[in-house]
Amino acid sequence: MTEQKKFKILMFITLIIGLTGLYFAYIKDLRLLFHDLTADYKAYLTVDEKIHLKEVYTYRIEKSDRYRMLFRYWDAPVAYKEELGSPFIQVVSVRSEYPWYVKDHRGNIHGEIEDNISKSLVLSKAYKNEIGIVKPDYFTTGFYNLKIEYIIYPPVEADQNFVHINLKLGEKHIPYTNIKIVIDDPMGRILEIFPHIPEHSVKKTEKGWIIKGKAKQNGLVELEILAHRFDLSGFYRNYSDVYGLTFEANKNLHKKFFDLIKMMFTGFVFIFPAFLYFFYRKFGREKSFIVPKFLSFIPDEKKKPYIVNMIFNGDVVVGDENGFYSTLLDLHLKGKIQIKPYDTDLQIEIIDPNVEESYEKLLISFLKQFTLDPDNKIFSSAVLENKVKRLYSEKNKTTLKILKTMMDRLFKYKDQKIISHYIDYRGKVIFRILAIFIIVITGGFSVFYLISSAEVMFNQIDLYPLFILSLTLSAQFTAVLLTPTQFLGRWKGMKYMEKLQWDAFKNFLSDLAMLKKYSPEDIVIWKKWLVYATALGAAKKVEKAMKKLNIDIPEIEISRKSRISFHRIYRTTSLNLSKLQSSKSYAGGGFGGGGGFGGGGAGGR
Image (tube, rainbow, N blue to C red):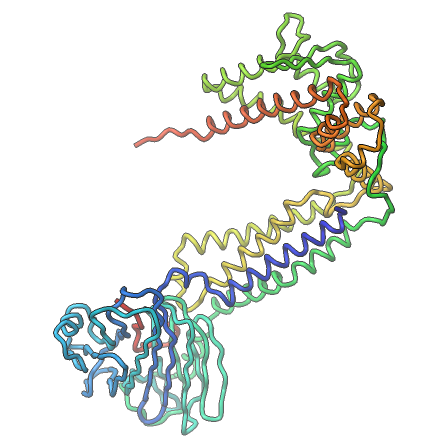
């Protein structure tokens, strides 16, 4: 697969991540998976000499036999067809297909409850100032309606020119998946409406306003109304500058800040694939070269297999285990070492330790440290394995860590000088810096959201969409960070053509039908192919092809046993060190949002 195709797949992945994030941020609220009771809330408010309020609740129950009472309660005093001497809410009527009740501010019960079980439930379970419906044998899955009409006698802040009312319609409630509030202003007295709802939109109509939105669990649902002075039934408190106080209290700078951040995150999530495309064009797009899909010759036999592994297999900035295995096999074929596989041991005799390459010197030095003989010429995998086991049993974490580091230098080889000769990776560096900056910000906010009870702290703001967008943006950047360096780097000179040639050679080595075209008698070529197949991560396929073609050479078993032995040792070393490192010892009514008259909200029990 060409780099361009891989990049298109990466762009598609980031697009899917972005669309998924936007879907869960704005359409599908994952929090609702944890709620089996939600409600749609409609309110019709008429502002005249008296404030008339009609509420319509549509409760949605997802699980049967869990709820016997569906209700809405108020923090403010509720009276049933009576008047009080302080701000209160007067219930005028209640309608539902089920028996309803009103438990007023004194605890007196009114309504259409006839059976003793329902009366007992309301008496013992209902809050004061609660209106609801009851079904002693439990509600089943479905929708249930409750309609309530009130006259509100609120606190009224007033001066000579203006009046201010703050109505809190909900603060402690189940999730409201849909909110619609219709405000009727028949005399045109209202100057401004200030909704305090986590997610909402406001539309001015000829007769008043329509507010639509939704509210998370216990999200604030409140209206501040500023109107010209008129005779309004309520309980007055005199102020000198109602107009100024109202606007001052509704600056909502923190909400505007979070809304701005959310808008920025939304935009960046949406345009991220396009941003990635232009970034790639600037730093990563390569020249076009025509190279056949299959290449049957080694592109450059002078190139050491560990360099082929580090540069042309996987991420260009680091090698892997195959660089080690291929170098062992290469040194064996050149007579520098002799590998002897046994049933329980892999022995490597160092015949000529004089090698030129720094990596080869590092490899020879490593082999000399785990030998059977006093002259340090015969490496034994059994000696190395026994040392790993002994260090673990002794809990010698320091020495085991040193051993792991030695193996990492061989199994994850890096050479900055060689790498810089092949590729300019400034693009990946720039992207990594940007990604770390973004991930720190988004990750920090995500942690804050999860551990700080943000849902409770900010009841006027719904931070959930911003949380999802933060995770989405982090995921998009992380997906790109996990790609090889060459994705956002650029090969120097003609090096990209060489990269394509090595890819074509790997395709050839991985295709049995192509390999069958070549003579089994040409043993020298097959041995060289096996070395570079190992470097390119295709050793198993070439070994399989050689067996099918009845090419019987000892290097097949040497290659296989070398990989098995060293991989087992490296894995055991890593696991044992991880176990030792993870072991631990233990020792012992007013202005502004939230200040409105009313409160409470809908729920079930």
